[in-house]
Length: 263
Image 1: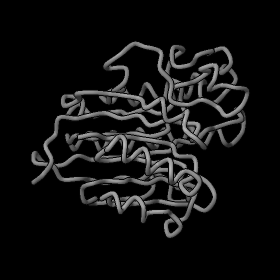
Image 2: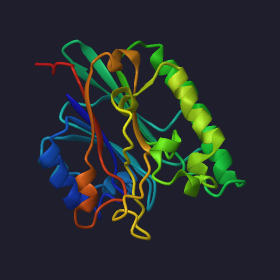
Image 3: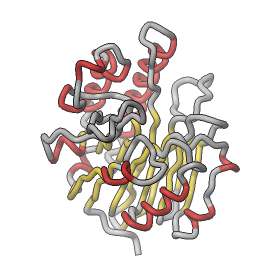
């Protein structure tokens, strides 16, 4: 089965691009970030016509996450636990049934955190602490679990074409990178780095010809529990989508797991 994540950067603006990619890539499950719409405003109809079930956790104008699945979504939960006062729509989780049990999917849009030295960076680090606690609880279930989305973290220097350009950015701060490593320390696997040491990117800014110069960074990640990592068969980045008309500044990242679909 194929699982993917994509920061779509506006579901209404990018619906034609999304549908074209779904028809081309044929993923079984997709986590979307930055849908930038309330739940009732999400353009679900053309996606449902392709056979997907849709669950959203929306917010007017910005943020917002969704899960699209060719399999019925069960136990859908919205919002990251740990702070009842946090109203930003940045996390959604669901379960799908497979022949061997279930696969749990967590879709996240981690805070950007800029500028450093403001409450935005503090919020980013606090959110990552909450994510770590939640991931620890989910890992205790010993299920195949994928925690995927836009992490807004550049893990290592190799994950940026020009890392020195990011030294003052929240995405590349020691605190952000350390929080990401703590997730790996829980037993989660960075699926891309489990399969290649190549310099690959998932985001190219719209400004200054970054796409044309391949001035990219890798900030969209798929992390897998041991039970999912044991079933990992392939990982890919659909870089070509960035060259389509009216693209998102992110591209899809996907993994294939050896799990049989439930009959």
